[in-house]
Length: 509
Length: 122
Image (cartoon, rainbow over all chains, first blue to last red; front, side, top):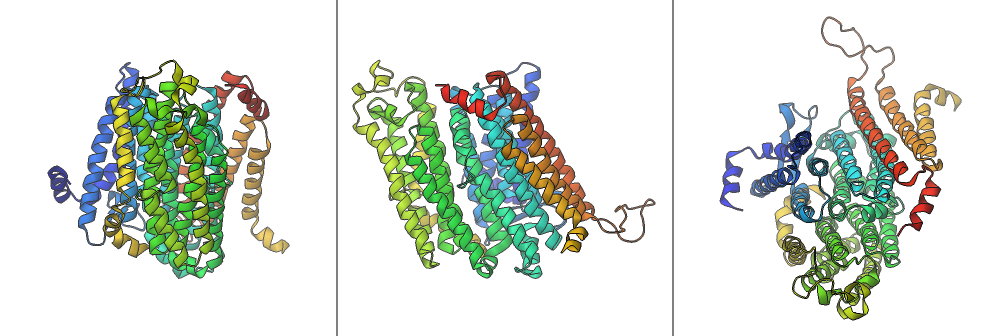
């Protein structure tokens, strides 16, 4: 950590940081809209400044969190004591998600500077979405989680429609209809949990639920609604239908941001509900329910990969691949032993980095050459060597080739699955990895071993060998390179990261 | 069995309204009707919370000279639903804005026609 953030971490109560991180983007989000009244295009500058400050605050929070022994910072908003007040909680699980959100929000913003969409309203929604995502990651209250989930949803629907196509608006509407049903199901779950216990605070619920008894019908019904609602938000098969249209019709910057973070944070919320609120004891008590969730997620792993193999559109292929990846992560959290949970967490972060950057890469090739289908990628590596190299590394992160973070994540989940006796899940992970390899190799093989002369999109000299084609600025290449390096290096450093979050893992599992 | 249902008529109503909303959301091909279905669906959740907070014979939970002695309804779910209603209103307005946008672009609100027109697009 740098000296500035170290000084900040020691002088300020780190609890205030959690609040500031959530509130800052939401408050600043009104500034671009106010600027619109005076015809000032202050959107990008405001958003960049706010997100840069937010990133610094997040790093400071992470630094002070890793200095605490139990890796736990709790902050009661407004000084109202829990369980009556709302609290924000930062621990080893949430801090990694918060870091991911802040980092991706800032880097994707760099991409949108040249590639759009532009306009003050876009940047307002962008900041609002960031605030919502950070709120979901940090809140320690079930109902507050619902509110942040809906803030996230509203901003995401608006952003998906922010392109100038009618298709985007239609995809956003479908996204919204399904997403709202998911959030409402979650809210019903919150209602049942409240009826059973009379509390909404997660830490308090953990105690109250076991006091009520895990066999209580209200407790079980609440679990079913909470998990189902968040599964819709996470786009698990078969409730994934909104997701490929939303990702492929949104402007590239939005697709990168939404695909990297929105479902990721929903899955994080699912992990919170299953591991923090319901705990491993509940899963042990209801082995059949646990198996149901795991096999439901396993179906998603296979179905997502199979559907991805059949896609000819690169963005849709990447979208279906998310269905599979989130199935894997949900299965990992439901297996709920230390290895599986850590693998799920690694995969959650690694997938966010890789998928967001792959969408940026797909956007780069679409702008530079008009390449959208798999066959359009023929020989593209000979024209855009740097972007293609980063794209290939990230694609292999998705497959789980060693030593990338994708490999380490799948490894830990696989080991965890075998430890808990879910051999079928381990087999599914292996099978799905083969399928992932199938569609990734199909793409990377064309990029590197196809001849650019045979590709009509490249024939008219679109782009030169040194400059990666028109529209590909150095900023975008830096974004891709950073993502590729992070995706690559998180693998070898997996055990160091594990040591950092170990106290949280012990508390959860 | 019947008495069970009658005693819990408010919960039965919640389930029925939820099912009607969800059915309309899935079945109707018209985008505006889908939004109405979504509204009905959300309304059932509001109904669920507010009825769950009701205490038979309980008064409003007021402090001060207005306060009623005896049992009180639980005010917390009511406040939660106030928030959820605000969320619902903003969702509806965004949904209608998107519907207007789709209609301007394609001149139809019918789901099947829309899919047809879009399949013809490049």
